[in-house]
Length: 262
Image 1: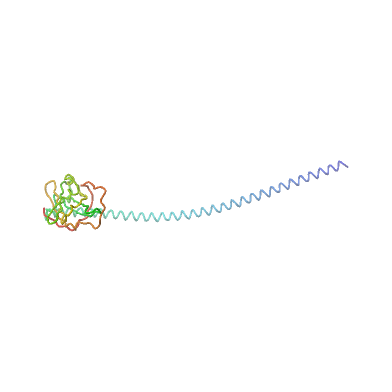
Image 2: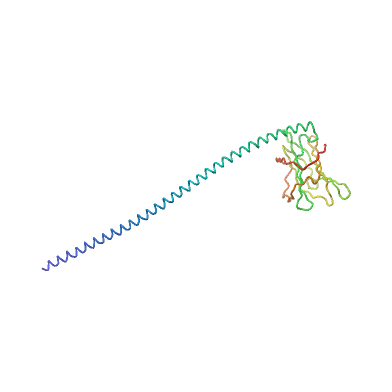
């Protein structure tokens, strides 16, 4: 009888252990399912998010590619326009060179005194500086004939006017502190001479006389009315005065001037 009770008790304990194991297994299965399902939902959400980002990046890339294409077309148009302008500029330069050669020829025939061995006065400009009674001047000479050798010569700038009741004249280079050696030029195509000077107290200028003498001895002269020389603006004094001569393309004509026969 006692043995039967022990067997029944053992069977009961074993049954409880089996039920407990099944319960734990079921619980683990449920927990695993829930965790897996949650992970799956998270991955699906991540997939949707990444897909949205991919589509957004694709749209942005498409817009950027469209903008690049538009800019490329505009760049091609600008390049074509620039090339056209460069061609027109070269054509204009060629025409200008032809006109200058023709002008030089006619000047030698009709008015030889306007040039000194192919050198002519292109422009003469004076600008008032901020400092009292001080001025900046710029003289550009032009080589009318294209030759292999450099053109050489000298320049004299003379201010003429009144000091009180007396007629007076001054050398502009002396007023500017430019020595005689710097008043010479060696050029090919163009020559620029410039500097700053101050008028003597009481001196009232009327004309500025420009005389250019070539190395061969021929000369050209031109006289300018003082007030006709001025540029429209008042300038600050340059920090440095560039050396003259220098080769610089500048075809700006000077103010209205009168020409004196040399």
